[in-house]
Amino acid sequence: MDDFITLTIGKKKNIALIAHDGKKAELIQWCQNHKSILEKHFLCGTGTTARMITDKTGLPVRGYNSGPLGGDQQIGAKIVEGKVDFVVFFSDPLTAQPHDPDVKALMRIAQVYDIPMAVNKASADFMITSIYMEKEYDHDVINFHKNIKERSETL
Image 1: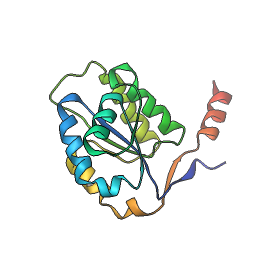
Image 2: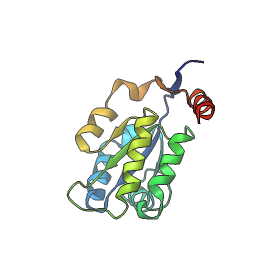
Image 3: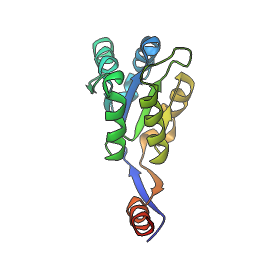
């Protein structure tokens, strides 16, 4: 059994949009600036951010719970399920966040599943204008079935 399996991110991306309170206006403006690209994809996000993006840009964004109420973890679960394959998270590095462990868990799960994740406007700009936004992208992730089997045999 191979150590890695290849997964494909489709042409139509499942994009999660998240922003801390101090960065919501910046993310909304970013969404407005890239509306012609974003409207070709499925969008979701944490509660308040999703609602504000839809209200201000007209883009349909499926909302989950607010970050402090488990929204970051819901997005992480969607990554595990293969239903989120691109994350734009405008985080505020200068303000303490009560749900910081949830944010770290989301970032970790994006890394584990090799999901592109922009954490600021510059990285989001580079990613949204990438040639991979218009085509499928194959990426290798840990073969979790093999990993679980091997761990269960050694514990």
